[in-house]
Amino acid sequence: MNAEKEPQTTLLLLVRHGQTPTTGKILPGRTPGLNLSDHGRDQAARVAQRLVALPVTAIYSSPLERTIQTADPTAQDLGLPIYREPGLLEGDFGDWTGAQLADLMKLPEWQTVQQRPDQFRFPNGESFSEMRDRVVATLTMLRNRHPGGTVVCFSHADLIRIAVSDALGNSLNKFQRISIGPCSVSAIAYQAESADSDPMVLTVNSTLEALSNLRVS
Image 1 (cartoon, rainbow, N blue to C red):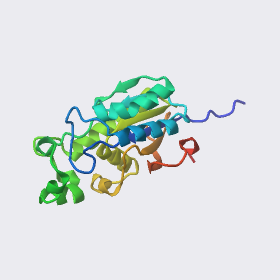
Image 2 (image 1 turned 60 degrees about the vertical axis):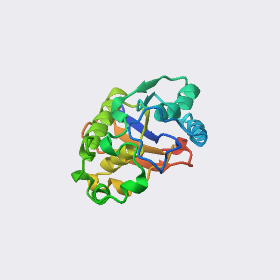
Image 3 (image 1 turned 120 degrees about the horizontal axis):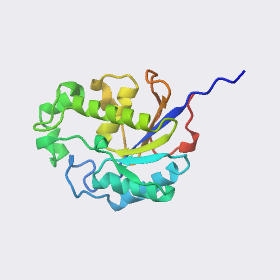
Image 4 (image 1 turned 30 degrees about the horizontal axis):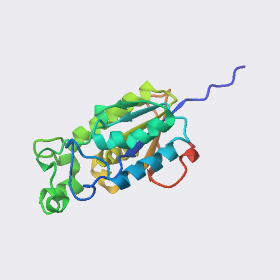
């Protein structure tokens, strides 16, 4: 009698881009031409050293410069191409793009952003609900494309926070409780042969531990 086949597990690693000159100061959104700082490049090199310990199948990145630059050391070390994936793109912050965070925090709308994001749309931009639908659809597409694989996705803080929160089964209004630092790694595992299986969040905002220790249990 043949042994029962073990279900395949697809692992998605969500990596925030490294630090830029505007990190923590400005809401850059999709502004082109924003590059990593020297510290951000060091962060990208360090996260590459952690990621190469895994059997990476494919690398995807938001098309913005700061995410491509973060992905580049990993791609070079692994000898893999970087696929630009629009679904991993930063949120469209509309009229808030390029604003000082200190100024935005003074707006009455800021409380809605923090406490009831499901009711907020950036002026002339994207809503948080649209961001959630976009990133969830993108990650579903990628895990279906690479069943049983290990896929690295370089993206942005809000997109990763929303994706992790959704994988945990939380409502959109709770995603702000999750911290995602520059070049941190968050890992979500899926049973590749079961479309209805719940995802398992293996780690969130990881910046230190060895990724080779990731296990599905």
